[in-house]
Amino acid sequence: MENGIERVNCLILGSGPAGFTAAVYAARANLAPVLYEGIEPGGQLMITTDVENYPGYPDGVQGPMMMDDFRKQAARMGTDIRAGFATSVDFSGPELKVEIDGKNTIIAGAVIISTGASAKWLGIESETRLNGHGVSACAVCDGFFFKGQPLAVIGGGDTAAEESLYLSKLSPKIHLIVRRDEMRASKVMQDRVFKSKNIEIHWNSETDEILGEEMVEGVRILNNKTNKKTVLDVKGFFVAIGHNPNTEIFKDYLDMDDAGYIITKPGSSHTNVAGVFAGGDAQDKVYRQAVTAAGTGCMAALDADRYLAEKELDEN
Ligand code: NDP
Image (cartoon, rainbow, N blue to C red; front, side, top):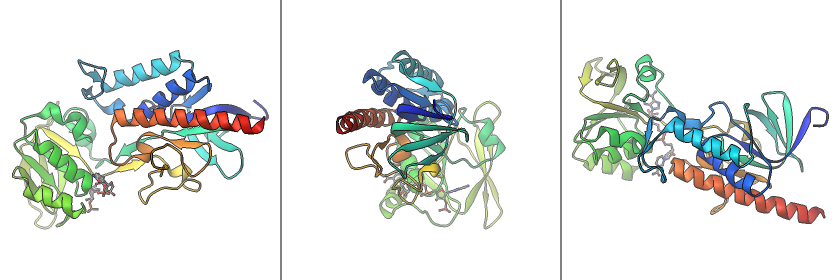
């Protein structure tokens, strides 16, 4: 530490599957990684119950338990795991500067961004109370648990269309709740939804309340044109109104798409700034799975390793 500034070889931001996988690879490559856990330690899996699609867990695993395993593995390999989150960055000069918790500055040889994305929620009380008990923001993660049951999906974009179509293969009845009289989803996705025999669309409809004490037992929707309320018999409620990538602090330096997802060079984790790499949901709006996040976290650590080795050669 010099004048409140710490120098770190490999700095990892975020503690979801991408961050911890990057940490395992970076630690094993002797990069002495320092990982800051971020605002939601463990990431989105901390609000998931059973995870049955992550390879290596034949009996499934609880999301928080899996993230604890990830954390332990990263720690055992020698990662310096710290509480705290990046509040601002300066990638304008030759040194990569990251401010932590609004006070400490870190100068890093390489930075791996794995800050993830956060699902958007409606923000109503019943949604928060029943989260993980029938309320979910991920059909691929949780749909299987509601096999054969009627379900609701809320949203009108590509995610809502995709989630409805995915669930329609598991459930006899999907109620798609759309707040306007048209969907925002691409034409091709809309066509698929319209053609599906078991997806019923409720236009101009908003969620009034999700019903149930312990588990979801129904949803009351409000038609915003007629003011009529209707109760739908559903056992699962899937919120698909979009995600926000946690990338705001990087926007002055990194190339991003319109929604704020970091753009990486195809087939790699390289961003437009040398020495800055991105993995996980911060750069992926299509797949968004724990296993793909882990894969891109691995890529980021391997890319960082090569970058640091080349930099050292250049300097000597
Ligand atoms: P979008 O922002 O595209 O759509 C969000 C939808 O949710 C909109 O229909 C919006 O309604 C609705 N919504 C937002 N807030 C509320 C609310 N409070 N109550 C009810 N409805 C609400 O998000 P997506 O996640 O669908 O997509 C994000 C991006 O990712 C898009 O560019 C999409 O194309 C892309 N994507 C691509 C996929 C693919 O290619 N396979 C799969 C999934 C996503 P309104 O229309 O009225 O604003």
